[in-house]
Image (tube, rainbow, N blue to C red):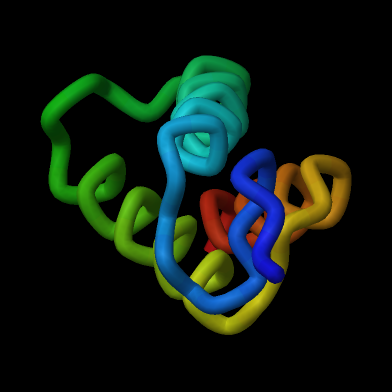
Length: 71
Protein backbone atom coordinates (compact mmCIF):
# COMPACT_ATOMS: atom_id res chain seq x y z
CA UNK A 1 0.00 0.00 0.00
CA UNK A 2 1.25 3.50 -0.85
CA UNK A 3 1.70 5.89 2.06
CA UNK A 4 -0.39 9.01 1.75
CA UNK A 5 2.49 10.98 3.26
CA UNK A 6 4.93 10.44 0.37
CA UNK A 7 4.17 8.95 -3.01
CA UNK A 8 6.42 6.24 -4.36
CA UNK A 9 4.64 5.90 -7.68
CA UNK A 10 5.41 9.26 -9.25
CA UNK A 11 1.96 10.56 -8.33
CA UNK A 12 2.33 13.79 -6.38
CA UNK A 13 0.34 14.13 -3.18
CA UNK A 14 -0.21 17.55 -1.56
CA UNK A 15 2.62 16.97 0.92
CA UNK A 16 4.96 16.11 -1.96
CA UNK A 17 4.06 19.30 -3.78
CA UNK A 18 4.55 21.31 -0.60
CA UNK A 19 8.03 19.84 -0.18
CA UNK A 20 8.93 20.48 -3.84
CA UNK A 21 7.72 24.08 -3.60
CA UNK A 22 9.66 24.71 -0.38
CA UNK A 23 12.87 23.34 -1.88
CA UNK A 24 12.28 25.18 -5.17
CA UNK A 25 11.59 28.48 -3.38
CA UNK A 26 14.64 28.11 -1.16
CA UNK A 27 16.96 27.48 -4.10
CA UNK A 28 15.34 30.22 -6.18
CA UNK A 29 15.83 32.81 -3.43
CA UNK A 30 19.36 31.70 -2.53
CA UNK A 31 20.44 31.78 -6.18
CA UNK A 32 18.70 35.10 -6.89
CA UNK A 33 16.40 33.68 -9.55
CA UNK A 34 13.47 36.06 -10.22
CA UNK A 35 9.90 34.80 -9.80
CA UNK A 36 8.36 34.04 -13.19
CA UNK A 37 11.66 34.10 -15.04
CA UNK A 38 12.65 31.56 -17.67
CA UNK A 39 15.32 30.26 -15.28
CA UNK A 40 12.69 29.77 -12.55
CA UNK A 41 10.48 27.90 -15.00
CA UNK A 42 13.36 25.58 -15.98
CA UNK A 43 14.16 24.98 -12.31
CA UNK A 44 10.55 24.04 -11.56
CA UNK A 45 10.53 21.57 -14.45
CA UNK A 46 13.73 20.00 -13.14
CA UNK A 47 12.19 19.71 -9.66
CA UNK A 48 9.20 17.83 -11.07
CA UNK A 49 11.46 15.61 -13.20
CA UNK A 50 13.52 14.68 -10.15
CA UNK A 51 10.34 13.79 -8.29
CA UNK A 52 9.02 11.79 -11.25
CA UNK A 53 12.31 9.90 -11.34
CA UNK A 54 11.74 8.84 -7.73
CA UNK A 55 13.73 11.42 -5.79
CA UNK A 56 11.82 12.18 -2.58
CA UNK A 57 14.63 13.15 -0.20
CA UNK A 58 14.57 16.86 0.67
CA UNK A 59 18.34 17.19 1.07
CA UNK A 60 19.04 15.48 -2.25
CA UNK A 61 16.41 17.56 -4.06
CA UNK A 62 17.94 20.72 -2.60
CA UNK A 63 21.50 19.85 -3.61
CA UNK A 64 20.54 18.75 -7.11
CA UNK A 65 18.40 21.84 -7.73
CA UNK A 66 21.24 24.07 -6.50
CA UNK A 67 23.57 22.42 -9.01
CA UNK A 68 21.08 22.92 -11.85
CA UNK A 69 20.46 26.53 -10.83
CA UNK A 70 24.16 27.27 -11.16
CA UNK A 71 24.48 25.91 -14.71
